[in-house]
Length: 289
Image (cartoon, rainbow, N blue to C red; front, side, top):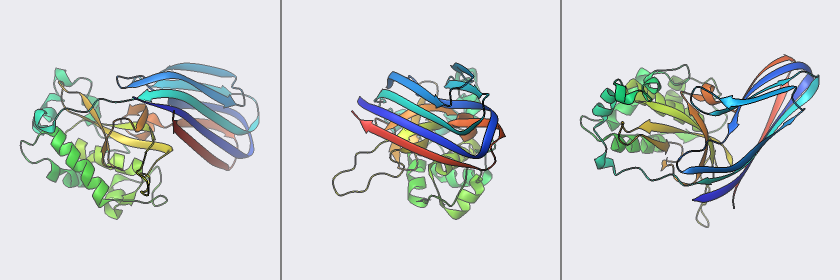
């Protein structure tokens, strides 16, 4: 396993004082087979009036905060030490045909995957995305073979280009312009799989790369990152795939949690009274130790 020290600092500065604020944070690294959380802490400034820790519907760690004193800035700093080493998936030819996985998702055996077949606002079961995904899933093809090909096609066909999309950019626009960032490619892949009736979930976390000398680092390194988990059926469970970099997730990704789309797992959400215009600064440092 690879051991990482993570620091993720998020700072909001407001044009005028915020009198009252309530925040929902998804900033707790998730303990899983293949991911051992040695320790984590969450520093908040100003000191919240109330703070509660718990789990959301998907089992992700959640922190609820309220700040009831006027403030002109808000900062959250996550520090964590995590070991990562996800097991490799089975051989593609050992996974069932994708049609069998689709059918299993609507039976009792697929109870934990069924909700990830349903389209959402940011990752709908989009007809255009389904048409894009369909060539990777001819009749009888093993599910993992199809998932791997779709992951590779997105990496090949789409350009990583920050600034051409926003959080609210629809999948149809990403598909038309063939450019975006990790969140866009993740939503696109999920939308395509859902259009075919296949379960897919949105994974949020971080990616760290170790490029060979003289080669560029992979896109998204030392940043918040997003990728896909696809379901291989009740026997094999979930496999994590990164369409931005055409990777099967192993030891370069640190997972915070998952949901149906970005809205389920956004690192910080808030409701503010006051504040006016705001600026955001984000800094991520993921260091192998």
